[in-house]
Length: 200
Image (cartoon, rainbow, N blue to C red; front, side):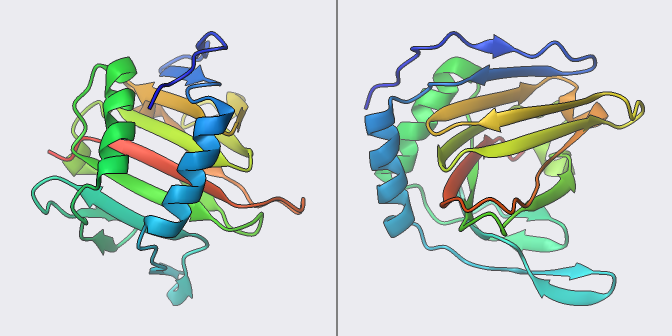
């Protein structure tokens, strides 16, 4: 599997953050194959989340893969990892090359359509360490990724995460910024997102 850097990486000029966007990390042909393979092979699940004291279906499907059976918890959800498969290991190796980080897990999200979303949050769980490195691969329909600064409400940024792209967040980013994938009323297809991380 070969990546394709046909477009130069874009370093976002944001304070208190280290974010780089690789718009064509995978060629379209490879990205198409990855999307189709992951859609069929991943054991997707839908967890319950509590909102204002009521249980609701999480507005997307998820799966966790990782080393040594280490669980990952967020939003009062504790996920148990599946063992790595060959396809995910290949994608992980390529993400590790640009991030210079050895990842131990990947959280996959499947957004079935524009009604699926991921609300405002930071990847700042204690098991991710002080300055977590997050490599996020996007496959399928392009979705808007929104960023907002915790202390300065005027600091906002929208990024269109394209098919085959990679977004790399590191340094103090998770301490100072939150991000989300909002719902959209546009008729769009599915999107698979792989967020590689280090669970300590």
